[in-house]
Amino acid sequence: MIRRKARIISRLDIKAPNLIKGIHLEGLRVVGDPNKFAESYYQQGADELLYVDIVASLYGRNSLSKIIESAAQNIFVPLTVGGGIRSIENVTEVLRAGADKVAINTAATQRPELITEVSRRFGAQCMVVSIEAKRKPSGGGWEAFTDNGREHTGLDVIAWAKKAQELGAGEILLTSVDQEGTRKGMDLELIKAITSTVSIPVIASGGVGDPTHVVRAIIEAGADAVAIADALHYDRFKLSDFKRAAAEAGIEVRP
Image (tube, rainbow, N blue to C red; front, side, top):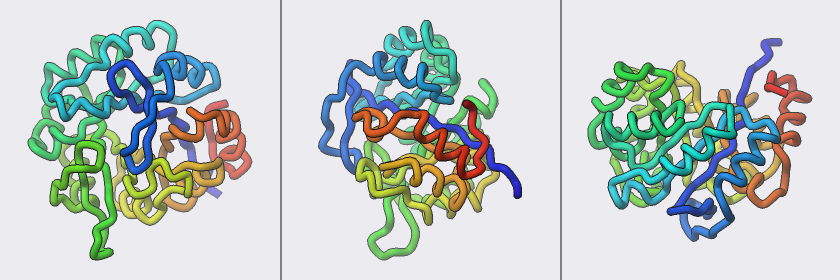
């Protein structure tokens, strides 16, 4: 049997100075100080941390630099930062603050060549394309959205993921808006559709309610990593619970 390697990532959605959480990316509630949670997740063994400024696209800027600067002093796993990143200058700013990778959604859908520009300048490993996917009402696949699942792009998710890879993306952050915050499990059909289309790593996000959901996303749908928010923020589970379940299922994870 081929042993799958996978990463368990803590996702932190940020609004101004606060860590927040919603359902379907809406109805946001303040959870607390993002860096207190981030340091806890680092101590628990998170493989990476994902910071998303969820209102950045509305204001056309990312305001996470100070939070990232603070985090980078005490946290020594890769940090990915997303939200409101629209230019090489924006990328440079968050990397200087201590980020290792950037996740770009809105600007990439509006000007896809930005993916190539970032990939060439900083390396493909730095360029993560963030895709917010909603199932089409007709039932035929998924559409990519921006601005926390509010704005239509008209882009088919599978075709967009394929194009993103061709343009130089090194990784895809795939969020199921339909499942996000529900704790009902991940959209395995969506994840499988993307992992079978692209050869770059896919981080699956949205819907994790317990460790079995993570195991299924990796083994059944081929996710290379799973980003978890709600289940960790509200202390329903520890990172060790997810890692233990993954290891018991034959998935290779960092202890």
